[in-house]
Image 1: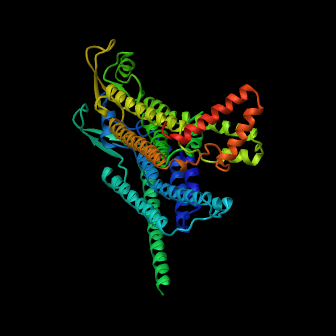
Image 2: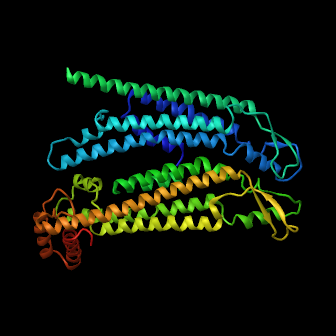
Length: 222
Length: 279
């Protein structure tokens, strides 16, 4: 079970999304997951091995690394991407449930073509609209929460070159040097920017859905 | 055979599960297996190489690591996930067995064409009769395995927290030696995360168990109040029970003993399914 399987699972959801939803999914897979896997993981690969402290005291390096990096950027991004993509599964489950209901009605005698049922695009209206809107809302919330967590944990989005460590067993204050700080800052800002773009897409999709439903309602009343 | 292979095998079971069962399967694959593979494995990747002891005594590092980490969290989680997902295979096997029986019956009643065979494969099995018991057993086993592993984790690593420092006195370490663990905070975060998802899965399993029991009781009371409403057809939704019974009776008089036994057993099962879906 890896990113490829997640892509397969979410690819199915793509069929029932709006156009903005499809763009969002593409941005997610190409500019976030793919960048994470092919580039960012290499940059952070030697984060602990090359975290060097100016001391011979055994254990000081471990303790200082743990103090300044309670959870690595890579893991936070992996969790963020998992959490942000799973609301789409709510929609997939709802669509599967709708199809199941239609099949049940077919079994009870109503005439519906089974093959057509499988390939038919489900329109986003009624309870599915609410599920879809909730999923977008949750996506936005998760994105915002993770962006805040990043900001809070690492005091901004910049990776310092040097950190001063005073945790036991380090003697007094020890200088520790972070590996590849500039490259890490570049990738952090890149992932932040793409995260921002994804949030904008989600907000746009939310507005689109709300406007579409309002127009439909006003057309019904007139 | 890897996690993706397990996913393929278990996706097939998905079709015959309840809605809660499907949610449980999604939680297992996305929030547990996927997090294990893409995140947790890299956190524990350097657990031995970055385990540093404040000594130059050869062998002390290895001995202390082995003393404090008899089995790594990653391996325990992998075992837990494998054991927790495999009871679903009991259900898959039972469904396959029932489908095999249905196909045999269809062949004997003269409906052995490709179209009917395909339909047997495609149609969703109702969780009733003996399948209900298999399904309930699989849910009980899942709960049991989850609880056992949570207990093992607690016993091996008290409090689910990863210490930054452990004091080691095992031979050949001189006196007491301070040993430092790599990334303790990140490990604690992931341990707590996996613990929470494990609890969510336990809750889902309990909900599924309650749902199955309540549904069976409701069906039984409905059946008791209206005995003639039984749909009858345990096998094949397309054939009326009377038509099939006629066919079966005809075959019983025509065929040899072994076949008669099989059909009698199947007829017996059919009646059992009608009478009591929770038997």
